[in-house]
Image (cartoon, rainbow, N blue to C red):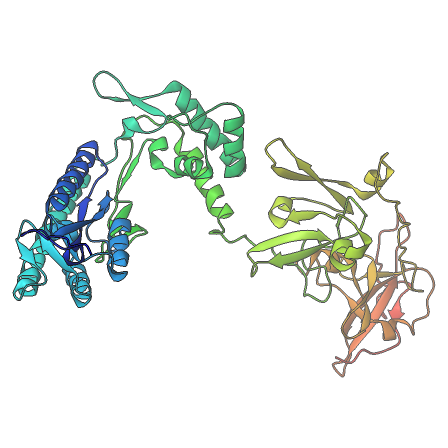
Length: 523
């Protein structure tokens, strides 16, 4: 049997309180870091010196506002308290624990419900005492009001500076700039060269990721020697300081002290010509347009539709663009709810099993193209991965050495007995046989109207069932009108031979070599 003597004043291990400390500083400055180290040392010595305490650790947060409940050190301390690892928390003051009255009371009540107390040294308050919560409520409200007052004063000071044209940002410390002996902002020649290169590449359509790769490959680095990343390049491309201006109050804090990007919810102040510019305003504006389009903020402008939608010829280039890999027609398609428009190989679209790699051409790349016949679209990619497009007359492309497909013989219009013999009475263009896919309805229509739309020609249209009853020699020009019953009918004149002057009035009965065609088209 062994008997141990417990001396007077010596605590039994089971009676010791598991005590921790919580410390917080609101900035990352070296001075604050030193303050945090001093606090931690102070609490470690204080807790370990008390025989009634068992040291349960020190929890701390640095550079985080006391208004935020999502503080890593604070949350870790709360989790350990819930796990039964803490009996008492010691902290310097209410404001160090939290600056929000709601957070203070919520946390204190939760801890008290678990039998865990908080001792605030400066106010000499324990939450486990009878009057502790009342005093805590009053003093934490004062602490919050004091903090909010200081915050409002800081906002007012900043607002006055903005109105006076005094920016919060130190431009001379930003990439591309420096300061002379008098503190005046000047350009850093080497860094300014890199900035201009970024803007030039971006304006040319080079993606941010490729600009970053281009800079790193050529040995250009950030001021700290690190390689460029996409965020760093984007920040430079979006900052007004590179065109000589400064935008103030780009962000703001809401009522819950959450920071947001200022998109017009608060006043902003812009100082133009504040310092030397690295790029022109025109170049800066162009880059913003490119970035906005890339981020999907600018809706692609749809090309003007032509025709009445009865066939695929609803765009100016419909029926004119062909794939460079298989020679198939390119079809116009839309995606992303109409925000993207492009031309794509019909073989790849309809018969992917045939293995054509196809071509995908943004509709914007074809704007301004004037094509009369058929053209093959070719894709080119430069060293930055930027794609550009050009076209070549289809026959010339297929005669080139190395054409990847075997040209197919042209489909002749002589498929129908009247092919090549009917001409529009409005404009003189050859009439084409057409068929509506969904109804099977067949008709002859002015070729100019089909290809270029109603602005080019009103067009003559004749149902195939009517035209098939006609008997005539050679080629004719067809006109349409109405008879005395209001029914649509057709007249014709022989197409002038080469060198003829055209229609010749005979005085009565229509045109020379002409007459009324049999068949009436009911409207």
